[in-house]
Image (cartoon, rainbow, N blue to C red):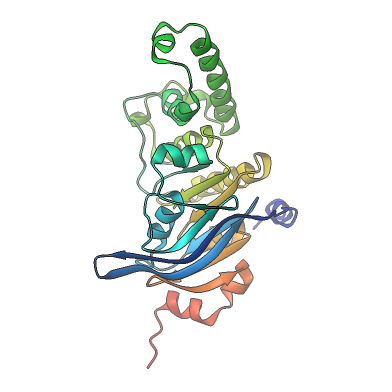
Length: 270
C-alpha cells in the first residue's frame, strides 16, 4: 500500500453501528448457505466480506441488500429491525449495490444508465414528466446536475454519451459504480468490484472506492477475492467458509488467524 492510502485509512473516523446482522441463517432446501452468522457494519467504514469459493459471501450480500430473507436471525438498519423489503424500498432506505456480473443497459448511453440510479428520487407525476413541464423540468435538471457531478468525480466525462455496450470491461465497472452512487446511498454494496480487471484498472478502482468513502462519507461493504486489495482498503474484515464465520477483525488480525489461513490454503484436519 502506498503512503497516501495508509494515511487515508488511518484518518478514517468510524461512527456507530449502521447495520447489524444477528444470528443469520439462510437455507436453500436442505442446504444451509449461511449458518448462524452475526456481525455489524459501522458508519463510515469499509467492511470486507471474504472467503473461498462457495463460502456464502454472495448469499450474505443478498441478505444485506434485502434480496434474500433469512429463515432465522434479524437484520437491523439504522437502529430499526428490517423486515422483507422490495427493491425500490431498499433504495429509499439508502442502500445501493453493484453486481458481480455487470448489470447495465448496453444500448443506452453512459449518462442515461447513470440517470436510472435516480429513479427513486423522481417524484413528478406522469403527465408533467411527459410534457417536461413545471416540477418535472426542475426535477430533471436537479437530477442531471447530480449525475454530472458523479461523472466528473469518476473521470468518465469523455464517454458520457457513449453506448455502454461499446465500452471495455473496466469502464463498464466504473459506470456501474456511478449508477450506484447516483442513488446517494448511505450503504454501498460492492460485489467483486475488481474482478476481471488488470493491475492498472484495479489501482483506479481502489482509488475511487477510497475516494467515495472519504469524500462522500459513504459506508462500504464489499466482497473481493484479491487479498491485496482487501488488506489495503478495509477497516475490518469478516471471513466466511462453508457458510460459517471463521474470522472477524482488522486486516492484521484476520491475516494472522490460523483458521482463516487453513481455509485459504485448504489444510485438512483429522
